[in-house]
Image (tube, rainbow, N blue to C red; front, side, top):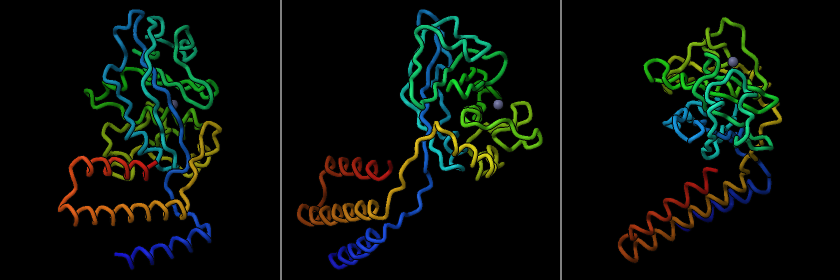
Length: 258
Ligand SMILES: [Zn+2]
């Protein structure tokens, strides 16, 4: 074990000196603030299940190396904002809009018969309840990804590309299950390379620094050091106490998966 550890140190040292970055699939993030719109008394809230289709949205935007990062849920009590016809209707007293590059996404009862709408310059998205009732409750699982595409500067595509996520709602072959989304199943939710280029030019994106070989190497060394400590503990005591095992299991994966 010691020999392996030493040779790994040499490899890491060489990588650190050369400054070579290892490939990382995610290069940017878009931060979204989900707001649940309820009536004036806090009842009859839209999207009562607090559904975000985060896995589906991330799977679609993985094609561009963008991670969609949702903040914690907020609630806005305003009966007038439950059924709206314009995203400007959401700019009312008591809303929870945040500044910076954060995209505010209001979940409403209805939006003018549409599934959703986006206002890029205002960083506003509205999502209707019909997104979640779609197809007997299977859900229209690419609408949030579609509206965020508008936010990132993408218009509707040709009208003849139903598998593209930026196709208009009437033409798009919408995903109703995550297994239908590219690279799986029916290959729904596609983005072209031109769309990816446009989206990556959005000023709303925050760059995520690629972990350098040095960072990864040090993390690897720390992991190996932990492994050798754990081995020592095991050989000394016979086995780890459950609490120790759980504590380490929590610590290491979260440290490496930022
Ligand atoms: Zn659209």
